[in-house]
Length: 405
Length: 68
Ligand code: HEM
Ligand code: SF4
Image (cartoon, rainbow over all chains, first blue to last red; front, side, top):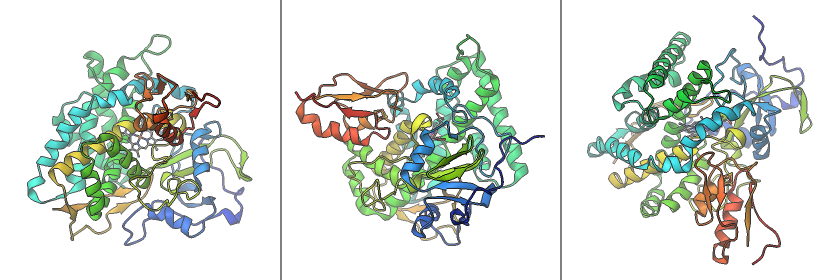
């Protein structure tokens, strides 16, 4: 079999741009996985460097280059990007294709994720948040991830896809293996399981369409009046399943970890419970400082960028957390300023692939914070935190966060 | 004063709408910015300028020479 998308040996990389960096590796005792990236900047890594780990890839560390990596899809593609390289890799719709092909599924999904559409979901989100929190508020403690942050976005997915909440345990189990397992056999089986569930789901929605995203995708017609390719439909469902779970879970975990240790922040948000606009503005700063996604791109052809030679199929990582603390863009970038006035963070990306779920994600987080602070106005970290509970990778985060009140 | 949007560049982050809903909204199909009344009153100038500066795509600008 010919491998089409494998990077070439990095002979084109000058030695001064080589850095020994493994973005999956968390040094023992590290409590915040984003610090592996900020450590690079502190140690004076070149703003564009190459590491031989994980199949070899570039890293951009300046805001302007990261934004360029997002915008210039003719140079930096989203097609076949996994790090380390795997092929063939599922072409998830619409993230895994470049414009103009990208536009087809993007436009199909867009109306269901606009601010207007998301505002209509507010009441249901509130009811689910409130019910979950009421389930443990009296206990005086919880594991924030197991008891809340993994459940809430998964149940949102069920709602978006017109599935009954009774199926929550099944979907939680599927996502647990998908995001946390390192066993290759379990992972391969898990992918089969997810696609089997999606297959059944879309077949059912094809027969009995409802007012949900799965039905919209499966009943949509392309420019010639035909149903979209079945594999594209499945891959779109797959993306919507995986894109909105771990990202939301770990962003929330960062936020609750900060709230648990910062009484002034809890007081600030409590004082804004009746002012959703101000609440949202302050959340924007939490989005900037807690950017969990490190995004991949693949070089489409040989070229020079900023005087550096890039070769076709080179991989690049765009670490949003680094862009969001670039001192040439943000004043006092390392400090959290809930009143920050200008905040062009890239937590949700920029350009054509800008996170389509950004409005939903922010609303899920806002509603969760509001309902939580109403029931549990004050809380702190429990003293018995689990050891080694952080991980790196394309989404960084935590496996456990114990809170008490 | 007048604010204009470049819809080719707008990607629907809706930061403008969050900051100054009096002037900006987003449409129901693509989620891109809609400016119903590009001429905004002076009391909104600060908020509009803030929205312009917070657009992550640089899609908004205050039209020059359009002083009321
Ligand atoms: C805090 C939570 C989230 C973060 C940090 C996040 C981050 C991102 C980023 C950085 C991208 C750009 C990817 C790229 O340029 O290659 C993206 C794309 C995407 N996200 Fe999110 N996301 C979040 C939540 C969600 C949710 C809740 C959903 C939906 C249910 C979602 C669905 C998507 C989809 C479908 C894309 C691909 C868009 C396209 O290619 O046009 N995300 N996300
Ligand atoms: S903030 Fe900019 S990109 Fe976002 S909707 Fe407004 S004009 Fe468009």
